[in-house]
Length: 234
Image (cartoon, rainbow, N blue to C red; front, side, top):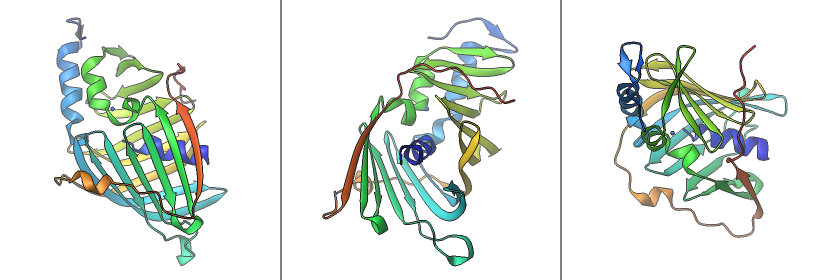
């Protein structure tokens, strides 16, 4: 279950300056461009198709992701290959430093405490507070509590690395990623194919979460503060 939760958290996902020159931009200008390209994460909605690899099965199902400030909600809808519906409907709420994952069909609620939550939902704040370094033609935010953020030459977020978990952002159009892939030890767990981005004004009430009665509750903790080494592609 922890592997599945880490994969989800990784979707939710969803992130000092110097005056040394890096190409035609100095690091202050690079940092500002990175922050500008991350502005869509302030308040947004993404919907499309999720491809989930689970216990040897490829599950295709629709998803809806909504984010406002430091709050995230993901709804995964029932539906699978050939109409067999192998994936239960799931609701994921991230707020404060807790992730609640509720699977109605299994009557299961998993509560996970994150340390620290900012590593996953406040990328633009982190980018504004930590140094940008150039690394082999790419740009990287100085590691924040063991989490690495890597940007491409157009200053788009390309990789988030959390221990053995790698989240890749690709297929950019107008500074928005239309594919997000989560891998663990280089094995694909989830790929989100985004059909549509939108930027509505949300009420905080959509992130409200009440614990249902008569459910199995599992509680755990994920500590993101342990440093890691970047896992390079072979």
